[in-house]
Image 1: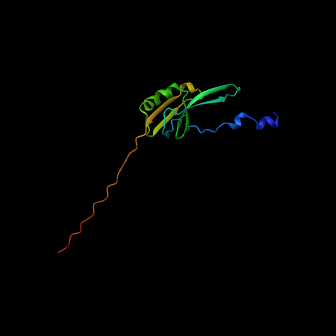
Image 2: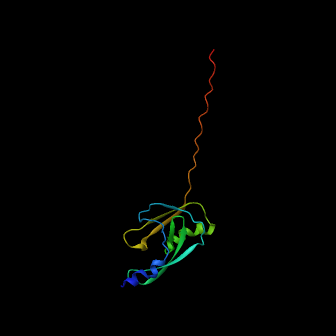
Image 3: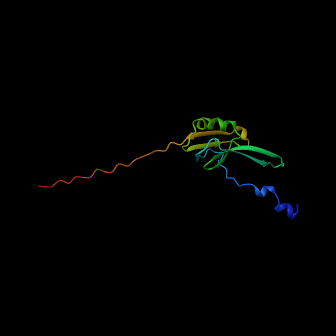
Length: 127
């Protein structure tokens, strides 16, 4: 590859994207979706150099890949209702075989607790 090819590569002009961080052991990731119709179609090259495309949902934590039908099934009820509150996503996968991946998406219900102020003690006069 010549010096000219190194700096005149169309890959250098692409936008950088952040992706939703998910591990394979079910650690919850919290996110919100502002617009369920905000889906980006991105193209990449695999290790053999072949071009492939995927759809990604824009979330507050980055882009969430929509390539899994199992994940889309979990997201659909929230997309249908236009859910704006915080959601939790968890992913479980054994080994390197992504075909066994299981997703769980749920509405994050925060616990609101209020501390009651102690009642003021009324001092009585001693006689």
